[in-house]
Image 1 (cartoon, helix red, strand yellow):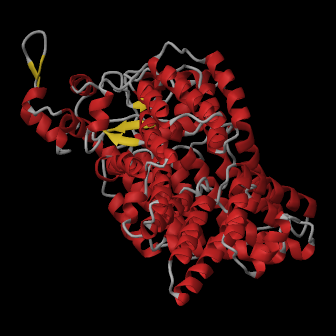
Image 2 (cartoon, helix red, strand yellow):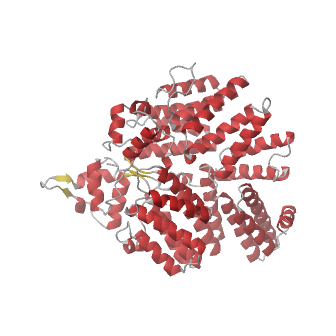
Length: 632
């Protein structure tokens, strides 16, 4: 049974002075929660998400191994979320009808989710009363409200419940309810989020939305409050480099600037207009990405136990006959027929049987179904780890070091997974501070990987990596590719990147979307450096699609810059005068777009890279001339 999940749920619940009845209300029975906390029962994905978000924490910090039916349902929800983002309403109606057919997994929570989607569809059709009715029905399924007249928050809300409350508020705005009523309603949501949703990763999207609507509601009557909420929302967007509601905020900014031109003074009206054009254009381009389904992934990682057993058995070269399990009393627990049904997703193995199979496949220690990258009974450690990851990705090494010291004080470093994470981060920090020769870099990465992977050489020498790797193991393999990439050995880099791309593409389609997106960006850079510009541009487009879909701009402006860089290189390498002008025009346009986004998020590295290329390639344009003046 999971060593972390039950204990952490119980610890968070007690810290927040909640009893089991209060936490489980409408989600599951007290007895079920008691068994989950004791490690005697595994919740399904929706129940887990509901419990952890009622405690104000984000579920995306966990890697999950699910029953295959539960994984399929989660995949369908990701597909539904894409259709909402793409505003493909007819297709969404068909998809939700298919979703209703699934049975047997937290059915009342599935029905609540369906109510939420149906309410969104009705809102888009301007059927506001019907939309509200679906919202009320959804909230009643978990006893979040008793009747439609008393829309007060009592107790704790899950993500689904909070989404429904927010949607009700949006419908009220569409109905043009009285301003005082609207303001009181959205302030109620804001107060709840600020009081109970303390996890930044979990609360930031809700806060961005609430501040946006409060800014609009208070515009005519409380202008200072309007600007306050606008500033608070923008601050959250910039902090998390998010595109969630960014287009709406930029459009709202244009209106506010007509009244007060001191709003966002570092941007001219023309720059704001072009930034808005950039956001709209890439939203449009992203909807045309081919094979979109492959790129709609879980943020951290979702697997099914069936696919892990099947793929790892192939990876270690065992037959189904090799996997027959005989207990101490010579009883056959897992025969060939049973294993075949598991691998063909016709049967879900019991937890004990799964553990025996995983042990035979060399995956002992990776048999937790709810899995955190670092092991500990204090959830604050996970939040510190996420801060470290954010600082590393933004090259803020001084802050990463401070957070690492805090983490070490809390962490049991004798645990092998914790030891692996600490060594990994220490190596990344060192690589930012000094040049590490490629051979030494690869050797150290392999040594860190060997802490949890039994035969590193065997795993890495395979043409395809099929066995189950954790989030940190995937990062380590990817960084072996990065070592070759940085040293200029692009063929070797593509070899490692390609193995991981196959892992995500063919074997584990919902595994660790953040790593996959970074991997594709690395591939786009290498292909560009190898002169394979079309491939590079294609990978960059996919990165942008994934960023926009996740409302995350971690790679957005870098990927657009990379596209501009590719067009610039093609401009320099062709002798065709017409093509030179075409490539130059595209290069300048991509640099404009990337510059404005990097300026918005204060990404100085991208800004300076653009300026350097403008100078090196002697580019000219009204925008480019202005940029040259800024950097003189």
